[in-house]
Length: 122
Image (cartoon, rainbow, N blue to C red; front, side, top):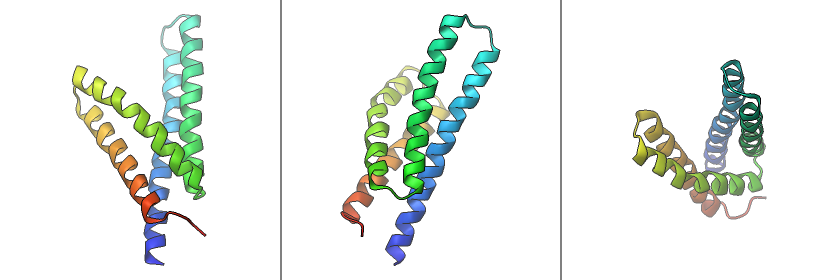
């Protein structure tokens, strides 16, 4: 029972993180729209931000509901962006980029560990 509780707490923490990241992209979009950009660029940013946020919100909601598919989706989507994060970090290092990379690595490692620890759920 304690293992299941710990598993649930970790998933809820990652779910909250993903939901906040998804919502943060809407705030960033709003701030971007308030700046001076042409209409074409604003539309491109809007579409990209919408899909990016949709993935995070889907991951966060699925993890909060304890869905197994959400764990796989989160591993795949988070791991697929790691090379880009490493490239950006190598290009222009910053504390924020290092922190983002460490958090995303921790999320992937945690979820892979949990999937192996709990191969099937009742």
